[in-house]
Length: 276
Image 1 (cartoon, rainbow, N blue to C red):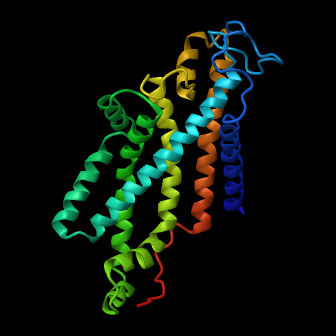
Image 2 (image 1 turned 60 degrees about the vertical axis):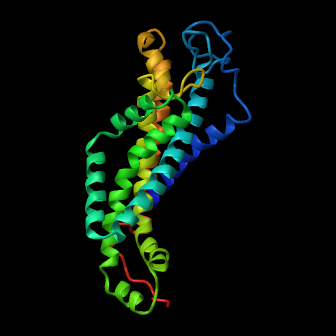
Image 3 (image 1 turned 90 degrees about the horizontal axis):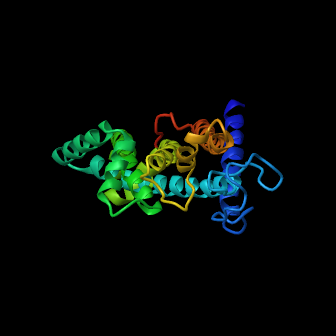
């Protein structure tokens, strides 16, 4: 019952944020660049969340921030999942020397904080942008996925049914897609879901430091940074993006927890039928 509750709570919170992000593609309450609401105006019917120091509608800015957060989260999680899964499988199937080299490289990358690695990638690129943020965060998180995939794949490859599959004439490619991936997929999906939440936090942190999506795009981290000097005069500037960020990250964590229980991601991989 607890797993279903977590799954539903997570699905509702993430679904609401995803719905707002999709809505911004076709409708916004106000022009995001319009400065006609008065500086730091309190919440009103015209501006439910008030206005910022330039007179722009806060609700519009927060809605655009949802689109940026979802874009970065999905993009970074997919990129990190694809790169990490590929590297992990290569390490699992590699000879001992190559496996040790890949494992050592992954340990070095994981030793660095994700945000620090993302900052280094952004600093080395031509400039901050949405694509750069996705690339930086995705690359930084791929090492975590790669190490997990390597460990799980080696555990699967040590099973007797893999030996039987090899004796029946199956190649490594067929074994990977017929046996290894189906067995490790539940755990990997849960970890990638958690990486989604970490990517959202990392993007907000980069934007807060001025290394994320540049203006006029309104990232939640950017909104928090701009509102810190006027927090007592216009508290909605911190409350609105802060609550939005919390709701999305909590939703992802609830969703990942529910998926873990639903997919039984902590179970020992079970053998599947060997098909020559």
